[in-house]
Image (cartoon, rainbow, N blue to C red):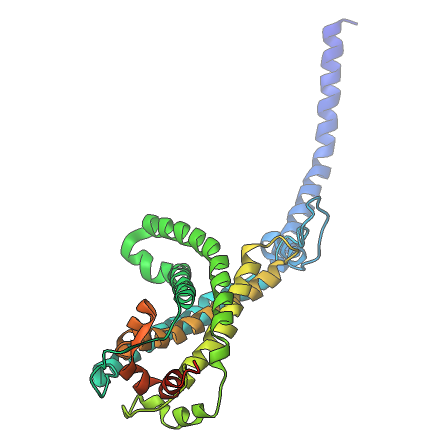
Length: 328
């Protein structure tokens, strides 16, 4: 038998086999199509089992030695994003508009607290050089952190529509790096500030009168106090100490996520950081107002360290008496 005949017989046999298998293949394809159709109805796009398993937060096997590396999807991130971009941004933004507006209206209505008597020309030292350096170091680093933090939280809502995506991106890149590096500097100055001023910010009996008369802010009357009045003491303990340390401490946790912090922990700390920072900024607006426009001569005391004796007597009479008696 010739070779060509053998090839023809083999081809004919193969064709016959394929023809015989066609009904079986057609049935298999039909069954697969029906099964796929049924699965599409029960589980659209065939993604439900996959995503259900991925979002179970059960860790798989990975070679990366970091917390949660084996978890593909961390569902708590959805809650964090909803809170940060929802209530925190919305209500924080509203308060950051209302509080400065209220302070501005108060200033327009009442103006600055001025001295009732002319300056005496005799000066008393109110702040040492060390205290002024610590105060200004804390204040400047805080302003840098506040502005960069607000840009990160509200930039896409307020800044980006004005300057565009590219400039806003550049602003945030610079701001983020400033924020990360200035944070530890702020903490260092903050600790020094607490050490420097804690002794003179202890509440005492003289603060009761200041509370009853609201410091004379509304009536304009003279209310005696020690070196720091009740309002300043409240700012020191609640604003500087509690909120300041909360913001700085949470910032360190976010700055250095290399000590086993999980994503869930970082998200919780981020919310604490944002809320505490917004409250601190709101309280600081009152402090900044009283230290600049709100009280005549207050800013000069932190610039030069000295105040006129008339100013000392009218704003901090008990402290003035201590100075005259040589006890301060």
